[in-house]
Length: 301
Image (cartoon, rainbow, N blue to C red; front, top):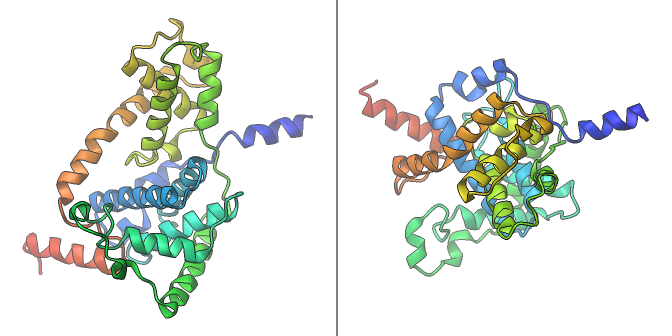
């Protein structure tokens, strides 16, 4: 009975990043600035989310893929943006997590999806494409190219598994959030559906956080903070007592997470302004070109 209880609890929690892992990364050791690393990680997470939606995968699978994508770059033992293409890692994470679920995707489906999202016809990478007709030639994959990309997909998947120590378990806060809303007795309120939607929206945007909220906090704390923030935004009255303590979250952690979630809108706006019409580097070659451009602008040799 005790072993079964411990096993059940382990499925509600995740191994968290250590201070050493958060202090530096393989990319930074290879000369990639922190701001560029954050931009690529953010763009890669958005790419993973968009690909999952295009493939009609459930949000929990997409979220797991985003967390694995983020974990891969963590610490000195993690992958480096000077060694791995972020777009390939994104595709491999989504392919792997879908394969482990009840919604597996074929390599061809995944690669076709990414070919479209990274093409000039995609709204994700080309804002002007909203006003033009899609060009199928821009995302067509020939059989030869497909076989090469499939081999790279499998190779990248193997690299990710080795870096993660074959640890693919990801506990998510979505179900916990619903359970907590029910426990707080707010699901019977007229605006309960809006509260649940806003709560889920904060949990999803937190996946893209530069503070790596999903790697530094347990699902229970993430669910609690998203409910607190959503209720404040929608003026939903919650119990006056410190109810978050019932869900294993102290006031300090709650405050940090709420600030982190609220800051996502500003971070996204800053990223959009920073890159403008330029695409964020998603390959090793593009990272090298960006670093070379920065060196020239800084007057370096």
